Image 1 (cartoon, rainbow, N blue to C red):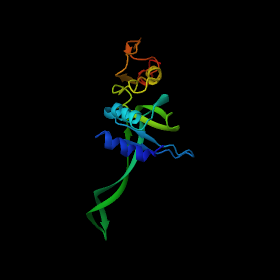
Image 2 (image 1 turned 180 degrees about the horizontal axis):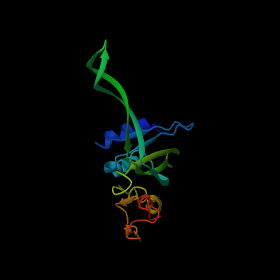
Image 3 (image 1 turned 60 degrees about the vertical axis):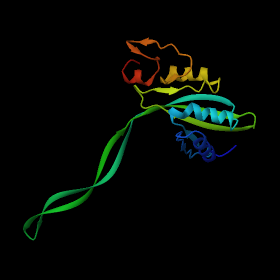
Image 4 (image 1 turned 45 degrees about the horizontal axis):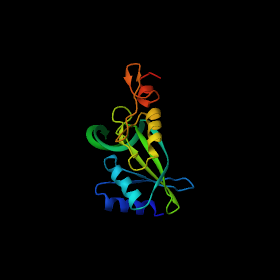
Length: 192
């Protein structure tokens, strides 16, 4: 099987604007994955199936990436009053400050793919939602690999990712909030 870098280049050449990003895996397996832009994921998946003969989706799962606090060091210039030889003077001083910000979390769908025809794999592809609360839609890969249907329904039930382009799953009403009972946005709302 081609390397992830070669597959990324082939997808970008065949599907303009696909914008794949390689997600490195520092483990011993070194099994890097490819994060696809949701807007081009179905076209990229069809290219993988039809041109690169990646014909089997073995499993799909979800990942809940929580909000993360990130500390950044920045240099700031300030006017400071200092006493030099008994005389107070205004001088500019550059100091290093630590600023904290919250990087919003997201939900991610992860697919493990193989080429049965070429006896190669796995290739791991990913898609991310806009956030963990209200931008939780991704395109379904069921039209490309039929085995994705049940697994995407499970991802919906457990993580709350809504997959468009496949048969709709029932969304139960949980205490006035619409969505699957185990979805992270319901846990955060104090419903679970």
